[in-house]
Amino acid sequence: MSHFLSSALTRRAFLASTASAAAGTMLPLSSPVHAAPVKDIRLRAAPGLTRLVPEPHGETPAWCYNGVVPGPELRVRQGERLRVLVENGLDEETTVHWHGVRLPNGMDGVPHLTQRPIGPGETFTYEFDAIDAGTFWYHPHQRSFEQVGRGLYGPLIIEEAEPVRVDRDVTWVLDDWRLTKSAAISDDFGNGHDMSHNGRVGNTVTINGRVPDTFAAKQGERIRLRLINAANARIFGLDFQRHQPMVIALDGQPVTPHAPDGRLVVLGPAMRADVVLDMAARPGSRVSVIDRFYRGLEYRLVDLAYDSAPLRDRAPDWSLALPANPLPEPDIKNAVRHDVVFNGGMMGGMVMAEMGGSMGDDSSGEMMGGRGMMGRMGPMMGMMHSGKIWFINGKAAEGHIMEPMLTLDRDRSHVIAMTNATAWHHPIHLHGHSFRVITRNGQPTRHREWQDTVLMAPREKVEIALVADNPGDWMFHCHILEHQAAGMMGVIRVA
Image (cartoon, rainbow, N blue to C red; front, side, top):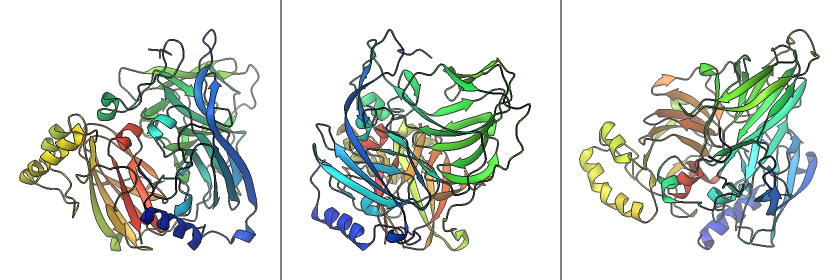
């Protein structure tokens, strides 16, 4: 592809976050504080320079953790305790959210809901146990559509005690950028078109903060490739062509090893996949990795460039199965059911009409008929003019301080039936928990995969199941960051 083609913290929210931290800075299933080795890390968020594109273009002004984009790869062992002192060197408030990590509510990094934002020149210490092994990442939840879009993110890898055997363990943080001809980041964050359509899709794609050319490989080599989509809005569909990737984990959680549907590894924003890639091409050859998600806009992401000397003649016959994480299994038969409808955006009215003229009712979450829909169109249109474009059960988020849209009884099993009544994809993320994806459009999923972010296609219906074992008020939102900022965000309370 072409390289250039807050309101104040309320007393309620403050008390909730401090009570959560005081009541216990770990989940019940974590080990006692004194038993867990502690790993201390410092992160400083501040403006810097990074080379996204090759010469003759100059470096790009960006926002960095510890002076680099992506931020440093944080690696800890499962069972260790992570203590991260974050210093804010920006001229605005920030936080750090530990995406996909099951941690105490007070450590979740959501401004005004779980903590007071970190002001310019201030510090905050996050501390939690690494309960689950897997591939996770960190990023701000304060004005994330701009702060993430300017480069504030990094990988968090929690290593298994018994990982799968591979020759190399490699992380690719995928991102795209909207750059000007001078390689500067375009300042048009939060514009109306991005907010109401498919978000801020850029014109320059990077792997680990650089426009990639080649990735060195050897015949017979087995690689564990950890893929993280850190883009604001771009969905990736990676075709490894003559290679057969085997998916062994999704969003950090082990899954039955399998080849991806249609041979494409599909990742919506914030999603991760661990794949095992056996390098099977001939020595000295090149094989392109193609991103094919958007039809008619395919492009070469990177070439797998083979060394002239093979590592071995054929792929090793090593096990691909990862050990399970300590997740409680939901009792689906006896689960409490909840209904959630996502609506709004450009062409949202047309899609709702196609789906029976329906919209989520505030009180019950049930699908309403045409008269109910028309009764709520007026308030929705008013909010659309005020910058709120996307809705969950007919309501748009106002800041991060909101009354819960759902209250889940603690330690009970719950099924959330979600309907995407819009014309756009939405990667839906729940904080503080992982969930099983159990059905799509009424059909059972093949792998019943654990995820924390599930990609919903337009008009798709998805059911997820979980045990609500982590108390607190948790964000539940679309991870296309422009959709989140324009209203597609709510709070789920576990109490």
